[in-house]
Length: 115
Image 1: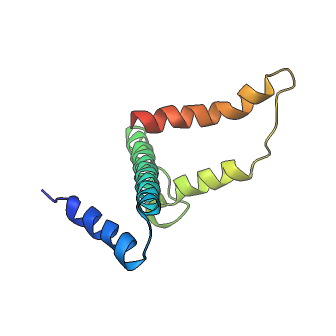
Image 2: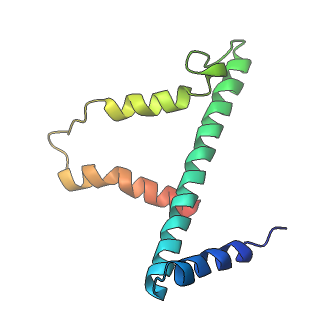
């Protein structure tokens, strides 16, 4: 099994000795990078599982599945995310504005926390 303490010790000494950062800044940068890495792996895992789900569902229905975007349809999930990001954002008139705006953030926090 690979020992990650080798990598963390090397990166810590790189930040502290080579870059001359204090302990606070070195630990802060390490924590932020670990958090970004975990979120990136979470996103990649979600993309792969959505792609596999679409292919399996297509096989159950005797069709090919996503094939239009990229080779073998591997960029279909990314195209769907971009489509949702450029859609118009609207607010419900009689909804609680604060709760309506922070609800997606709360769902993501719970999902990442469970992961």
